[in-house]
Length: 132
Image (cartoon, rainbow, N blue to C red; front, top):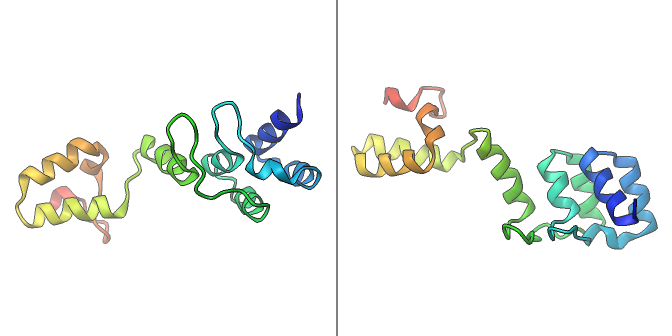
């Protein structure tokens, strides 16, 4: 396995000690990119390796680097993963609640079509939106 592949494999697996060793030997790895033009920070974020995220940032990883496939930042990868699991942003929930409270059925339908998980969302007090 080459140096770069070993580094990315260690990041994906969450092997913090090995990632630190590899970064000490070659600090440029913090900004290195794989075949899809993604950085180690993309993978550390995607897999929830918080300590690795901190290590990579301290080593000079670019926090807003964009990958080559989707032009997404590491934060975008994390959000997309959570969206696949049904995750929503608080503002999306608040927007639907606002539409419901103001009788804007057209806007509520649009939000629900865009984010189907909103149908099961609750307000900040835990009350399901469908009960508003």
